[in-house]
Amino acid sequence: MRSMTGHTRISLAASSVLAGILLAGVAAWGQENEFPPPETERLPVLKLSLADAIDAALDKSPNVRLFRERIAAARAASHTQLGALLPNISSMGKFNTQTFFLGTIGGAPERTDPFEIVDGRASFTQSIFSLSLIERWRASRSALHVAQLDSSTTENDTAAKVALAYFEVLRNQETLEARVANVSLYEELVAFIKNRQEGGMATGLDTARLETQLENERQRLELVKGEVDRAKFALLNSIGIGYDLTLELTDELKGFGGKIPSLEHAMEAAGVNRPELKAQMQRIRTAELSLRSIKGERLPSLSAEGNYGLIGNKFDNTTGTYSVGVQLSVPIFDGGQREGRIGQSASEFNQENFKLVLVKNQIGMEVREALVTLKSALEQHRIAQDGLKASLTEVNLAQERIRMLSSHTLELSNALFSLVRARDNMIDALFRVNASRVNLARAQGQVDQLRDQQTQQALLR
Image 1 (cartoon, rainbow, N blue to C red):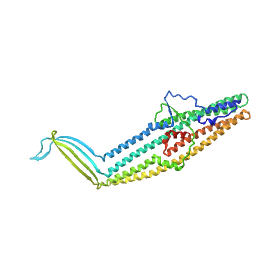
Image 2 (cartoon, one colour):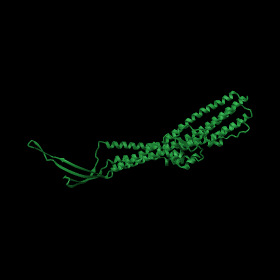
Image 3 (spheres, rainbow, N blue to C red):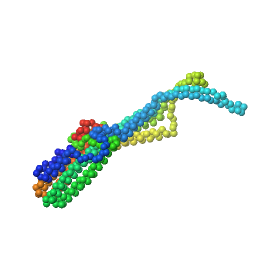
Image 4 (cartoon, rainbow, N blue to C red):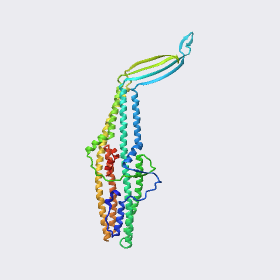
């Protein structure tokens, strides 16, 4: 694995056959992945960096697009409420042939002769003052802001999900390279021990022990091959670009050497940047305006209306008529319906305030958890580095004892097992460091910075 070459080279004496075997096996750990890729049926190859994956998800993810459509729906609802405050103009045309009832004369009902009426008219209405309509429109504007902030929340969550899925693929790919190197090393060691057994310097138990470890590594290799494909499918699904392609990631798992922010700084950033917090505060505002809208129905409302048109008994025999006036509506009693809606709206307003406390508590927990996890991951990475160095030293010492014919292969077998485990620990530690960085960025509401090249390099440094 490229990122760990400096930790995995073993200096062995050239005169020893076993030294050559160990050098070749461990060097494979630091080489490019040369094993043939699985059959892909000539699917198109997509090369993705972390930033590219996030950008693609924000453009293609069905979940992100769903919330953007909700913004469009909220904007349309706001336009509808605004329309109630603007002039409403309509027109109509009417042509009637009719009669009138004149009464009953001499026992028989009488009516007029048929006559025609032609009427073409334009009408308008305009709200002059209605506090309820004004507050209802303001509430719809606030709901539009909520939809926009909910969309931002979804984008941030999607970016974090994609970043975690990206690092999961990298971890499995690194593990796959390690498994290939392990299998190659054990195959060469089994062959070497069999030669020693033929020369009387090893026993069948020595051979069987290493063959058992070899088969274990082969099984783990097959398992991780499936995990690589599964992780790639999960990444493609989170991006929303389909599965009919071959995915190649261009970034690598690397350690982090930056500074961990203090709790105060992280909480301050979360308070400023988290869209969930802004959205909940906007929901409180929306609920307040909705309550004021219903309460506004208690007040009188004033509107103007009028019409103008041509009316007559023929199309060419009409005269202009008009009507203009104002209407004052004073609510008196509606059976208590309004008061019931006010009570319901007041309860919804209180519920949104309680939800704000829950959101703040959740954000505080996420920030603290992300900081603790990052600190733990960095410590695990440090320990994994020390463990890898110790395991390499153990392998060197076991090799030297074998070369001097002063020890049997049990010590070497144990040393190789420790090396395999140390490699796994290093990969897991690197993944935890990068995953913790993503979680901390999300907790602070700064996931969008993962798309920035400079921040991305700091994450992967």
